[in-house]
Length: 95
Image (cartoon, rainbow, N blue to C red; front, side, top):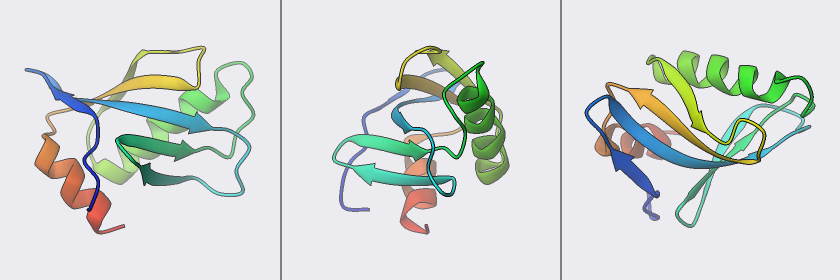
């Protein structure tokens, strides 16, 4: 991975800044600069995007994922439990 994500390690895991793009044709992750872009297939109504992000990232990463900031915004902070910066960099480089 050429870019370095804006992340903070905490005692619970890794907090990652993400920007959400709703209404994409398929779910996916893209790194742009220091930010992780999450492409969601859902419409931004009634928490659909948030539920998809938590479900898909939990499935992809094999770790519990929570949105800790930005529930009603496209700018979010997600907590990936028991994860470290090197883990996310390795995962994204394999995508």
